[in-house]
Length: 312
Ligand code: ADP
Image (cartoon, rainbow, N blue to C red; front, side, top):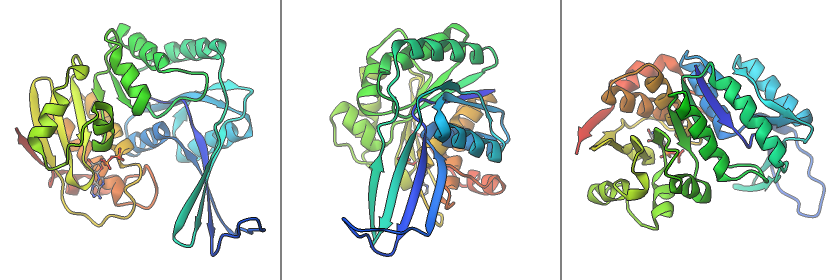
C-alpha cells in the first residue's frame, strides 16, 4: 500500500465573480469547494490508477470533516490524526480575468501533536510499502519532521518519495542521515534550491545541476519540465523523457500526478524505463483534465506508448 502524507491540507474554495467589488458586497452563485493539498492529489491519482493507497496527515474541525467526506466520496481510504484545531480554507476569487487568493495560515501544532502524529504514522507504516510526502508544513512543524518520517520509513525498508520545495526541501536535503528514495522538483524549484537559472533545454546544465552533492544518496532525482517532459537522474544514469503534444486543459496538479505515477511504478517494482514512463504518463494525463489531481486511466496506454526516453 502507498501511504500518501499531506500535513497541510485545506478546503479549496473557488468563487467565480463577474466583477469584484472591493469594499462592497459580492454575491457568489458559482461556488466550488474541493479537498485540497498536494498529497490528496497524489492519493486520488494513485486510487484512479487502481493501486492501494491510504491518505494521512492531520485534520481538525468541520473543515477537516469536509475533507474526509470528499475523500469518502472519491472512495479513497484515509486515516488522519485528528486535532481540535480547525483545518484551513484557501479561497480563490476569479474575477475579470484575475485570480485573487486568500490563504488561511491554518492551525499551529505543538511538539506534543508532532509526537502524536509520528506515533500515528509509525502505526500506518506497518501496512505501508511506499510513502509519499507532499507539500508544505503547518505552523509549529519543521522540516525535521519530514526527516524523522523518512528515517522511520527507512527503518522498515520503506522507500519515500518527497515532493516539497524551498526551505523545507533544503533542510531535508541537508540532513544526510535520512535520504528519500526520490525527489521531484520542477525546474523552478531546482533552480531556486541551487540558486541557478538552468533552462529546460539545457541538457548539460540540467545534468550538472542534478549531480550536485546535495542530492547524494538519493536514487531518483526527477526534474519535471512542464510540457517539455522531464530530466532524470537515477543512480549514476541520466535520462531525458519526452512527452507527446496533447490538448492541455489544466496542468495544475501535474507534478502531484507524477509523484503518484512514481509511487505506483516503484510499488510494482517496475524497470527504470517503466517507472519514468509511468510518471510522465500520469503527469500528462492530469494536464488533459479539468480537475486538479485527476487522471483518466482509460487513456493511460495511449499516452504511455508515446513517451520517449533517451539515455544521456
Ligand atoms: P509541477 O506541477 O510540479 O510544476 P510540471 O509542471 O513540471 O510539475 O509538470 C509535471 C509533469 O506533468 C511534466 O513532467 C509532464 O509530464 C506533465 N505536464 C505538465 N504540463 C504539461 C503540459 N502543458 N502538457 C503536457 N504534459 C504536461
